Image (cartoon, rainbow, N blue to C red; front, side, top):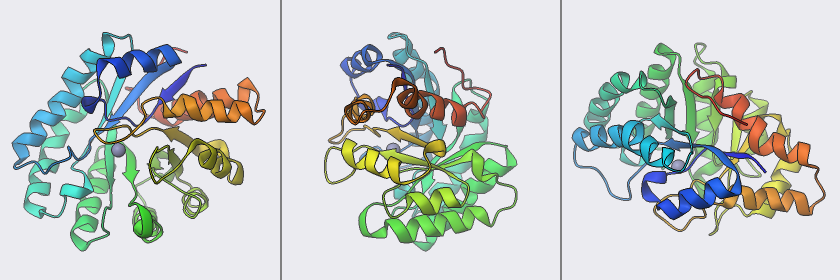
Length: 268
Ligand SMILES: [Zn+2]
């Protein structure tokens, strides 16, 4: 099979993971800016991270023949400090011209706080001003529906933003329809612990319109599975879906969304 990994934090992964992904049919990997597992102490830490995402990591992936793309932002977990957030957001424009940048992400909410909302609005404004795609992280567990609703309502209220150029990630049973009914794309994240299994993801896929949906592993420095996407494809195969439908979900859908950014190219 061929597939796109649209959300993976590869700076935290090993070269063995790159090899396994390419062997499984991965044609491109996309890496949103994220929390490092610890809070960075200054904007300089983000500057270095953005260099890593736009320069070093694409070169590392290229050694395995895998095109690497990235998204830039200050993640919601570090967005409580408004001064730091302003300093980091001010760094982003100079990186938007780099070859592998897809847009602004993964922005969003973590605890649905007022400061997180403020920083989210600043990122959305940055995307609007620079005509960028947006990738949104939604909070986990009990905060998910409330946070997703806050995000959807806020972005919908900005007339400069085309919902077709925004993907709201980590949707679940109770948020997928809400996101897609509002015109956005949705992302299903396959987690080994506590969250979305392959079977659950395919159940959700079957319950909503699969036209604007992608799946990702969101693998990072924690317990996660870099091959979760092809594993989910295997679950579709087990349920009797044909190759064409599987190719649409795991390759054509993400390619359609990502191709709205001129920097994204992929060889089938
Ligand atoms: Zn992520």
